[in-house]
Length: 347
Image 1 (cartoon, one colour):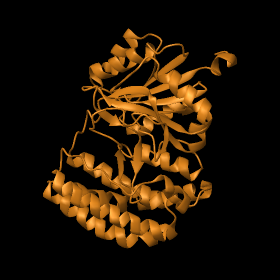
Image 2 (cartoon, helix red, strand yellow):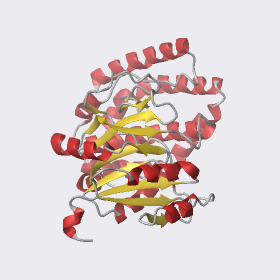
Image 3 (cartoon, helix red, strand yellow):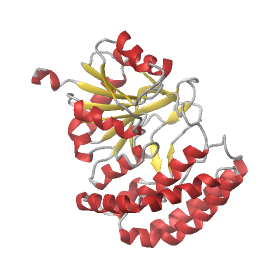
Image 4 (cartoon, helix red, strand yellow):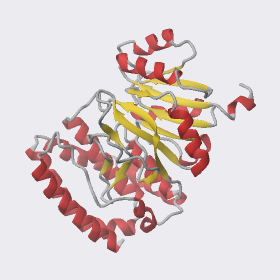
């Protein structure tokens, strides 16, 4: 490919695992993007529904990379290695993009500088509902989508810095993606995006929310709320805490974490997900050497101290109303918020 063309090219990396009609709809909308030269890279994690074949037949320009097994979200690394563009997008296969989505993200990057960017994510099945107006990290590692489930009435129309960009759609330049590095295969599913944004902050790379760009997202089409999902969420939250914070910070927040973990366990137990919490800790023990090795590697590259990084984190924490009543939710949020403020003051 001509080097001059690469300066304006954007590489769209889409993962697929039995995506069915959703991945076809996604790719079709991407190819309808206005005025931007694209290469669309589909990484298939050994789908059995033949959706990857159907996509290639319908979209001959598609660059299909076939995995022989499902390696989870780290399959995006194959996309990074094969991307030719000046810009790179991680895009979930259950999204549909607005025609001007990419123009807006590129212009925002040019205006606001190096960083990770996400658009406003709207529910695919109800285009009046917010899916994510930027993702936020609580200092205890709880990640959540700001505004999720709210009516979109213009309350999230300001460009701003956020904790991390949603893996459903993350945009940046090739140089920034390669600076942060690969998606760690240890995660498999969930919180890989939280980890990626946090690693960005470690290197002084911000995450930004650009509301003028619109992408529609279905969200969690595979696992929904399940023991398996809670296992990954809790295990991967702790992988981040154990490998991204300094040892000094870990010691300071440990008493708060212990109390919170007891609460989290009994809450999950009451919902029938206690086994997932116990399994998550078993997996942490099993992967202890990997996590410690990861921490050492990240520490060598880290340029920002935790005290500076957590300025971009929040004390709040959003709990899905679909799995908890409002009264219990408010009590838990109040406790987490109070503990967060106390822990923040001593970091």
